Length: 238
Image (cartoon, rainbow, N blue to C red; front, top):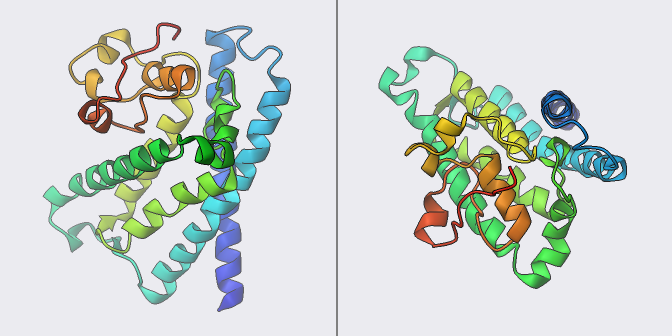
């Protein structure tokens, strides 16, 4: 049993690391074409971002691997594979619930990590990326990575979700994590400045957090920032 759990954790770590290289690599390449020179003289910073991200991949991979083993071998989780196991109307509800709960957890833990002592101990690694790049999406101190690694593994125990919808949640996490750190806005201005865009976090919103630190703490949605009056709008540099 322990061998199977070990190899499951190892496999998930490898998958997360590969996903990181693929997604960050694609958007780093897009940055080279969209913003020529943006990464010039950032070589040492990018190498640090990649090093910290590989550590984060292991921290994310271990609980994910344990949960994957438990799902397959013991039926521990609420993940299901049959389309008719739950009503079809429920399919989009689960990923929205996952994203909303993850966003809530992220907002409050992120804001908590901006307290001076915790910032120095946990969050300064991430903010050492000046300016942030696509490689910074998982560049976390291990303690910070741990706060993010437990959310989805915990939710699959309590909220039923189809395996395909779980894949959608992970895809949104990956894409938004990378694109919010690119240093340029990939989404159309018409969307970013629309009524819908006013509730979504994109690069121009998160960039302002990296510029001013004490604002724009959210991950996917601007709900908590607006409710708690920590939303300072969009960066003018993106």
